[in-house]
Length: 334
Ligand code: KG4
Ligand code: ZN
Image (cartoon, rainbow, N blue to C red; front, side, top):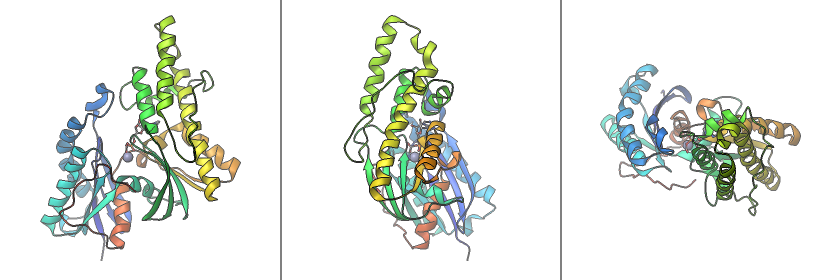
């Protein structure tokens, strides 16, 4: 019997649907919401409305392009959390109704686990146990991955996520949301040692990114006092220096986690893993420390339903289904 699963992702500002058939991803349709650009961040109310507009066309396209008729779907999977409550609600309500109408099981997926399981879409796949640094707009976590569905958070941020640090820095520089990719672009042309920002020194495997945000705020304020065009003249060097500091902060803890747990299988996941500086720094460390490093394809770094489908594949195999009485969990934990 073929196992065909429709997966839906709507936790933040990306509406996405994918079909997985016998463990193989057939497609991954993503509709990005541009409505947030001018606000410097995701506006929850606008995100839910945009999900409502995009969801049905995106799902329709995923089903049509897969060539699998609706009546041959084996299950519907959806992100239950963590994420924005209103956004999650749109995906979860649809998934429940769709599963009910087709009389097929419903699978609830944790978005952060799915980011990690994106590594199992293509080869090479990490070997268990491995450590994953999951870096997104809402999370910064070090996760010890023991098997596909057995994960333990061994370190996380006590305040902002690293993606937030990228986005808030971008906002201070007058760049639109999401600023991470734009900082990455400017950083490629700048000098990472041009300016110094503090690397936070938290105990153990705990991260903190609120200090660097304040340091950047004061740095810009002081320089703008003397030169109103400071940002436009030095944007490449500022971006390169900020990015360098954020990457060093991440790498310090990743090295510590690898040493503490004696694990050299290292993966990165989440939106910030698209960062070119982070990707190349990790490759350098891999050579130096003899790590096996796993970096996702760009399309599977930021939010997408293919990763939800991959998680659903493992849950289906274990018969991990949920009832139609489930509700989204905005703060769902691994
Ligand atoms: O995983 P994701 O798509 O959504 C969440 O689950 O949060 O991550 C979005 C985050 C945003 O903060 C965005 O600025 C950041 O990923 N991001 C990047 C890059 N591409 C996306 N940050 C730095 N460099 C990039 N190239
Ligand atoms: Zn995400």
